[in-house]
Length: 298
Image 1 (cartoon, rainbow, N blue to C red):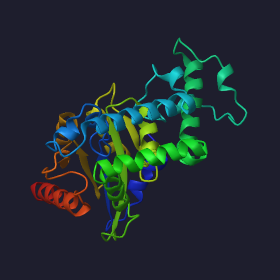
Image 2 (tube, one colour; image 1 turned 45 degrees about the vertical axis):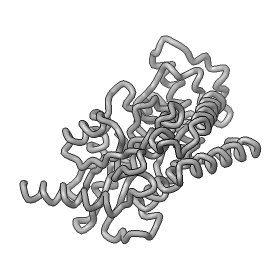
Image 3 (cartoon, rainbow, N blue to C red; image 1 turned 180 degrees about the vertical axis):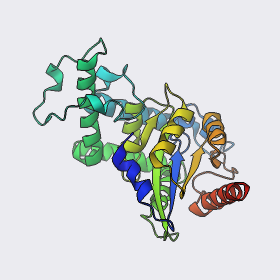
């Protein structure tokens, strides 16, 4: 794993707590599947327009695929999923890619060392684009299409997207709604989707300023438990606490195995943990209860 990032846990002082939040993406930080299949609208007993839900979901699907295909080499690398963007960094020789012709490098099967280097180049280029942000990638028309879709989705879902983003801002100390003295925090995303579309979603759903691309994991092939173990290896230390937040059984089970607190997200309007509604104080109370109990037992 990335030695530079993992050093942040080592640097924490004895008085400082590092909180590592491990978020699921779909149906947690964003809504997509439930918009497409009508289950989100169905949870509101006719108060939400089901046709509008499906229309919004399809527009997101198209935008995600367009970004992947036009800017993230997805047609070429779709069958070469990796669990995180630096997984094959060892094959990257650091070549200057400024004038590199990706269309002419003949990336293809077999998946040998030469093609792994070409894939590593693409991963590095994707990471650089992620860091720049969509407004440096898309033209003015597409930026407007994207912004309009985000606003329409946020309005339809009563602020789900913006409230989730605000909570991740608070988690990393970018918002002052809760004191962050003696705490440093990291947001990670572990999603069951494949890596490249998941990075595209992070950008399109405006999560790139609160989740670094190095902290986005795809459990597509390896499973969420393995991703959780990798994250613990990266950030483990005497004052590091972990919390998983998601809507699915797999992340719940993985959190139980890791003995981490878990917050279950549901989109039904009367759910105890959803957006808007979930706040950092609630998450911290659960973390305090679990870790205080563990320290007493230990």
